[in-house]
Amino acid sequence: MSYPQDRYHGENGEVSASFRAAAEEPELVNAAGWETYYLATGKPTGRENDIATDGEFGLYHVRNMAPGGGTGTHFHRTMSESFFVTDGSLSVFDGKRWREAVKGDFLYVPAGGLHSFSNDTDAPVSFLMLFAPGAPREGYFEGVGHLAALSAEERREFFLAHDNHFVDLEEGPRLGR
Image (cartoon, rainbow, N blue to C red; front, side, top):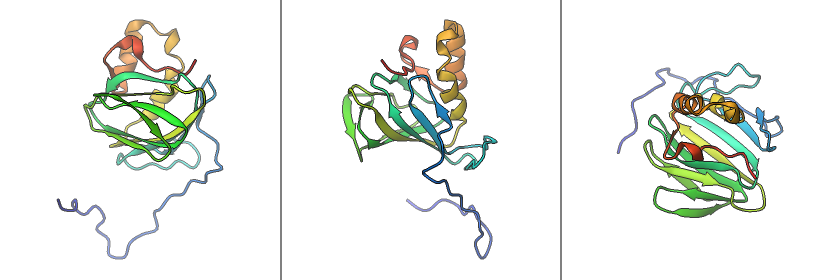
């Protein structure tokens, strides 16, 4: 394996790094009270302190996902998804079996890989989600809270628009118990 082609062609480097402080407020707090921090998005969102990666990846920190929160088994056609548990315990399905992922555990799911995750404990869980290449996941995260008001066809269209292909459409995202 070799390094990819050069992407920077200057001679002396440039000042272009971005920083986000841990003390910043979350971009999204859903009805169940869990928080999603948009650490780095694939495209600019227009929000203050936005860190956009020009489509390279999207990185999100989900904090305090409520017991019962999670999603049904699904796959993505356009991107990989990775999970890194930062606190608590997250049940993750790798397409073959369920595993209990605890602080420091990591799951990588390539494009097309069946996967699911759930908080099956009585305590909140926090984790990082990395999507590569970066896609506009913010619209998906923000729209999940409104799924109950949609018809079955509208839900299907929403999922397809956001590259979420569920094995069973009735087992889509869950905010918690």
